[in-house]
Length: 84
Image (cartoon, rainbow, N blue to C red; front, side, top):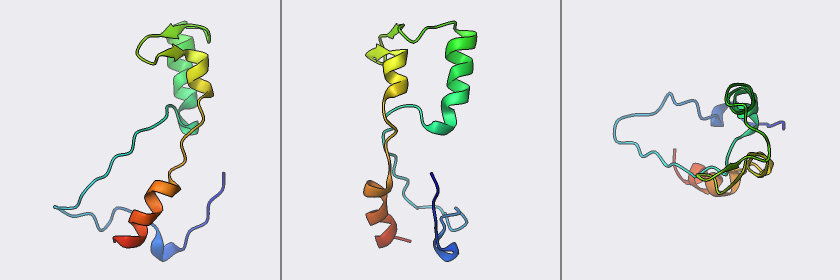
C-alpha cells in the first residue's frame, strides 16, 4: 500500500504530553510487517504446520494467517479530525 499525507498533519508524537489519552484498538491478527517474524517463530523455531490448531486462537495457523488485516482509517479518522 502507498499513502499520502500533508506534512503539517503528520502524527509524529512530538506533541504528546502528560494527561493525553491513548486509545487502543483490537487487532485482527498479524499485520503485513509482522509476517517475517511470524514465519521465523512459528515455522522455523516452533516447527508448526499451517494445519496445526491453536486453542488460544480458536483456529489453525493457516486460518489465522489468512485473516484479513484490519484497516484503521474508518475508526481513527473521525478522532484525528476532532482532536489535536
